[in-house]
Structure formats: structure tokens, C-alpha cells
Length: 371
Image 1 (cartoon, rainbow, N blue to C red):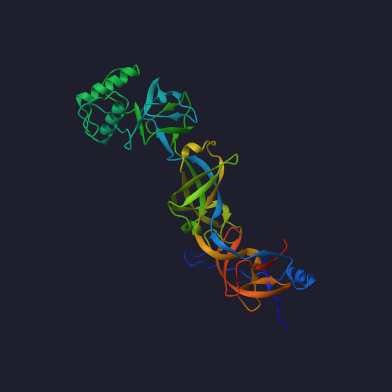
Image 2: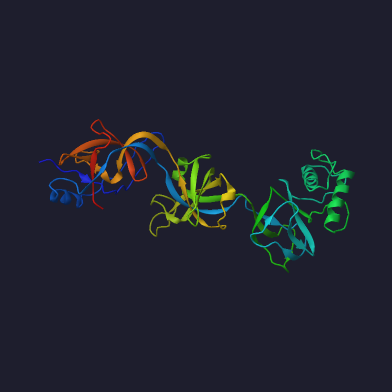
């Protein structure tokens, strides 16, 4: 008497997706109640589903956190008492006031080179060039050559105009503690010091970020190859809205994730379950940042598109049978009868699996357990 196949019942204990290969390896489950159900139904499965032809995506959903790009700490340029500081959530643009030391404002200017020295007549360098670009953008440096990295007499005049506008001493020089350079507009993430604190050069005062909204999430290092820069994503936002975006970066140094346990063979394995899975950080940028108005650090869900197979046959994953003679199959139901048909397996995605086999056709009904 022929042995009956075993329902998989969706118990896919191991699925190994191979990039470009389109195959998967599955652990074989133990016999369960599906066989008794089929006997009670006269050999027919308790439910059926159609074989479908169409596009199949291997996309998955992951949980992430909404934030801002380019987080960094701004350090004090000189000593003194902190007398004012921008509040958390403040958005600052060029010439905006970041904080005050002894009543003297430290203002935001745009540039990649940090303010590492006082700037005065005769100085040369990229920091001087940055200062001149900012003075020109603010309307104080008419006639300055923004490509010239020399602090000229015209630069000193522009500095005095800037100082006069802010009602400070018109020295024509810019102190190291007067300006903080950053890549562009900044959002205050948190204060690292409080009003009344004594500051010292290099002591953190503010944590700031860029104003561009991003999403960060962690991905198991072994899965990191499934995403790459430029891949499209959909982000489900708090409140039910969604926004489209793309992968900006994926990778970097792998690190253990305290929320996940690793296998017994990894570092820290053995008794006590100290093993951890290596994780990489993935960063998502939005196609239209203006559409994203949820609070900072809000939880979001990121839909990764993954690979798409065009025009393939697929069945629900729980339609698969582990055949007694080895391999996998499905139970085709037609004219009140059921027969087992061996199938080859391709890509898994969204609860379905790509199947191949000469005996399969679109629209056939295949057995599934009634879960």
C-alpha cells in the first residue's frame, strides 16, 4: 500500500533563499493530523486553493525607527558658562543661534571643515572659504570671491557687517567660539549640557542632526545581501499613512543585537543562551521628505521589495507536501479526486512559493490544510 505524503502545514523550519538561484531548502516535518482529516473526507483535502500565474516578490517587512540624517555632537569651542541653549526639536538654518556662552551667541554656518581656529586677516584655507561663502549667502559679503580661500580686507569688512547686524563688537575677526560649521540646516536632537553648566573646549553641548527624514533598521548580517543601495521601499507611518523611499545604505560593521539569539556555534554560545546574531544597520531615505511629518523616533514598518519573478506559477506555502519518496509535491484536486504531483521549488514570497512541474497548470486546485 502506497504511503501517503505529509502535509507541511507551513512548518518551514529552514528556508535558504539563494540569490539568482531561486531555490529553497526545507526541513521535513513530522506526520500530523492532516492525514486523518483527508481520510475522513474520503481522501480529499479539507480545503483547496488555485495554482496562480503571475509575478512573485520575495519582499519582506521589517520594523524600523523614524529619525533624522547625519547625527553628530556639537562641542564647545571655548570655556565659559552656558547661558542659553536651543531647545530639543528646534530647526536651525544658516546664522541661527545654537547656544550662548557667557551671553555670547554661537551661530550655525554651513561647511564640512570644523571651526578649529579663530579666523582673521591673512589666514588661508578651506575654513576661510566656507566663512566667505556663508557671509555672501547672508548678504554681508557682496563682492567677495567665494572660491578664494584668503581672509582679505574685504572679508574683514563683511565680518564687521555681520557683527553689526547681531549687535556685537565689530572686530572684523571670527573667534573659534563664535561659529559652528555643519553640513546644512540642523535639527536639535538633545541638549548635552544645561544652562548654568561650565563648559570647556571639546565638551559636548548639543546633539544635532540634519533635517532630512530617514528610517533606520537592523537586519541580520546573513540577510544583508538581500538589500542594496537604491532598492525601492514603502514605509508605513504612524496613523496609517505611507511614503515611498529607497535604501540609502546597507552594511557597515556588524554588531550583536541583544534582542536576537544566535546559534550554539557562535561567540558566546553554549549554556545560558548568550549567543547573539550579528546585525547591520540599513538606512532608508524618502522620495518626498515633506510628506513625512511623524514625530522623531516613531516606530515604522518598512516593506522591502526584494527580488521579483515574472509570470511564474505559485501555490500557497502550506499546500506543499513532503513526499514519502523524497522531494516535495502538491495534491491536485479535480473531478472529486485527488492526486499527488511532484514539484520543483523556486522563490518564496508573501506566503506563496514558486512551483514548477509538467503536470501543473494555472487554475488547478491544490489541497491545503484547513487552518
